[in-house]
Image (cartoon, rainbow, N blue to C red):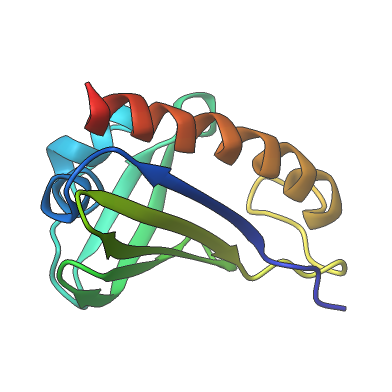
Amino acid sequence: MMLPNICQTAVFQAPIQKVWEAVATSEGLAAWFMPNDFQPVVGHSFHLNAGPFGMSPCQVTEVDPPHRLSFRWGKDWTITFELKEKGEQTEFTLIHSGWDSEQVTEFGEAHTVVRDRMDQGWKKLVQSLGAYVEG
């Protein structure tokens, strides 16, 4: 049974291009999320350095500058960043999809357990992104 997506939305005091560079470049992602070898090219395979969980395989599935970026994360998940220009501000939405109550992660943990932890983690990460682009 599918579980609800994790969705986090925030409005940043930063122009859309600055937020785009923070979510669609390797350097930008490393500053607030995880070290990586990301490139904003559909089909590009890359890894997120998930610390104690090791190198996590990903693949870019959508790049629509400066409004939308999606990538597969591990075997089950899709991460999507949506950006909307609001004058001098940017509305940022994160969507973490692919949650299934009958699935376990590559590390043997149930999605039902990991989803709650990731929901809290994304709240902190979106705050970190805001501090990075507004700083």
